[in-house]
Length: 167
View 1 (cartoon, rainbow, N blue to C red):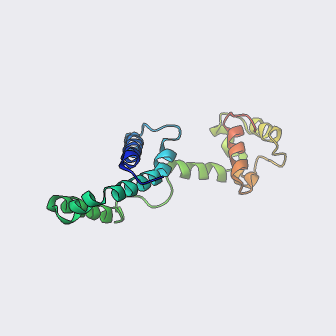
View 2: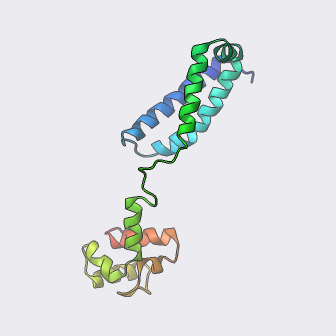
View 3: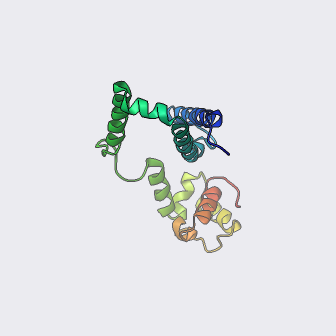
């Protein structure tokens, strides 16, 4: 296949539409399903499409960079903004997100302490965990000990504890 504006430009436009739409959805926290994954992975399509578009429009691209003060200024501003994006944010809190901290706290707690959070008695939660394949569970067993550093087991335990069905 020959490099051509006939497909490089529409590919760039399509990739831009995908990136813009998913980016705006993420900005307003309206993303769902695979929006974030699509945004992250399809950014590679955007990079490739822009590279192809620049290649087939090389003469115009050079003119914008070499002969156009406005074009150079826009590119310079974009590079400065990119460089600034690597500056650490002093207002950002170090460490995990609040939901992750809560999850870690629940997983570090014994069954008897998690049961009230799940709206169950310790005996009810123990019975559910044992029925779900965690026969070694006792009231003093920590959930992370049951999970044995296995995310699938962790998900199953949380599913059981908070009303889901065992997998």
